[in-house]
Image (cartoon, rainbow, N blue to C red; front, side, top):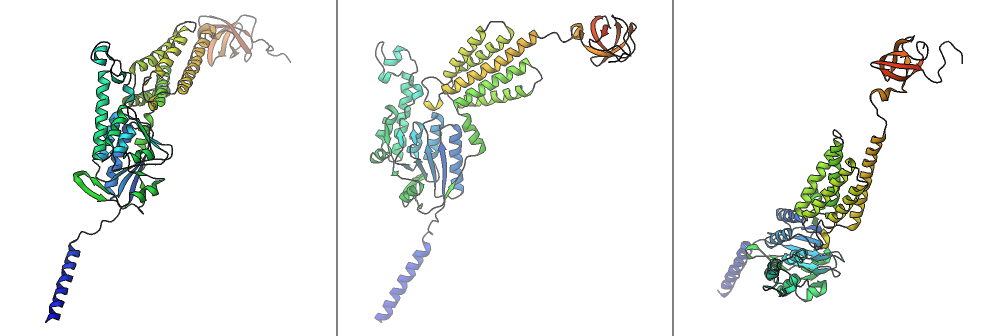
Length: 461
């Protein structure tokens, strides 16, 4: 009896274990690791690239999205958009500042803090998130310190201080949401604080220091991250396949247009192309190239913090060069044009703009030389045209040569400049077929003589 009871208990226990095993959710199959690289300034195309990559990683069932980051900073609007995308991403996200010598500066700091896992190569730097383009905004004395003569904190006006406060609070909120050092995040904005990779790990700013992508994936394997709606996901990345999601042709092209040096080049080409077309109506190609460059330059100005007074100086310089062709200023307009262009180019993004949006002085020098060469050619062509002998009318026919279509004794016909003319010989008779030279014109009749060096008809040589 006892044996039967024992067998019954064992059977019930086995059935319960089988039922429990059958009701348990199957283990989640590990997916690939999707990876993108963000290199250079953070701009609108960078934000679009990240948005698309998050969507692709979700659709492909990726284990996580790995963002390899190296940036000196970027636009505030694009930074906020990227931070929001990372905070609300439906897949786990990892930002890895790499390779050695890379930065996650300014806007890159926000992007790194917003990821589920923040990682850095040992030889990289993070921080300096102060909105530097606002440092020198002039403000009335009443706003700078509240009272006349009182110095504002950090030398900033009330408007720029409000922006700094907003950025600092946003950095704190992002860090707190991800469980990172919120005090340092705020300090990075207010005081441009920076940290090396190992110091950032020690102070709780990042989660991992890794030598390469494989080392990173091995270290984060098994970590649990929180997704929106408090959903927990355990990463299985140790042996995962890494699938790169490249930027589209559009994203690459628009990212290139965010370069301030390229903006200056586009403005110069647009100005030269349009002016050449105005000077030579019907050339078509210079006008088309100038129009395209102008449209591309307008896009660049929409995504870059451009000083429109500087754009006005560049346009004014082009007008001065154009006027030099029409007005004999003895080089004064040319000198004024060069000065106006150089000043406009150097001021294009402002002296207090971050380094990544400043125009290189080497590019300014090359463009100024190119403009000078272009207008030297144009002005030289205009001068040569003024000095050239008149090419139409009686003056053009003088000294032209032709041949006699009939005997001139003294009247007859000649063939000159592709046309038949009535003609009259002024120095004796001229035989048919002999070479003639025009010496004058009376109405529609040419005055001709036997061409110098031509033998009279019927004589030997």
